[in-house]
Image 1: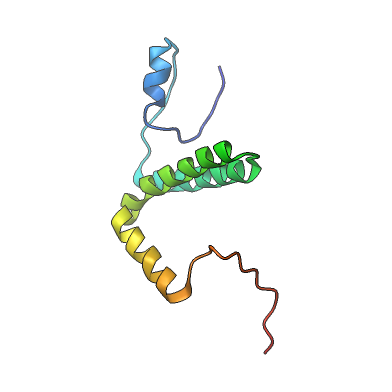
Image 2: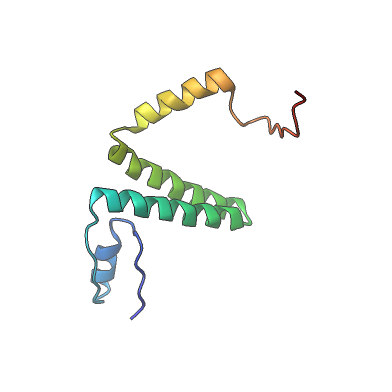
Length: 107
C-alpha cells in the first residue's frame, strides 16, 4: 500500500472509495492545513517549472491557483481582497508582462 502523507484535492477520498480501495486520512487543523498548502504550492510550482508544453503548464498553473483559493480563508481573506491587493501593487509598481530583467543599479 503506497504511503502519500500529503494534501490532496477534496474529491480524492471519494474517488478512491468508488474504486473499492481502502485508505486512511484525516482532516487537518487550520495551522496544519496552511503548512501543507505551502508544501503543495512548492510541489506544484516545481511541476510548472518542469512543464514542457502549454497544456501541462496551464494544468499546473490551475493547481497553483486552486491552492491560492484554498489558503485565502485561512488568512481571513478572499479572492476579491487578493485581487484588490494585486491591482493596487500593479498600479503602484507595475506588473510583469514586459519581461524586464534588472541587472544592476548604480549608487
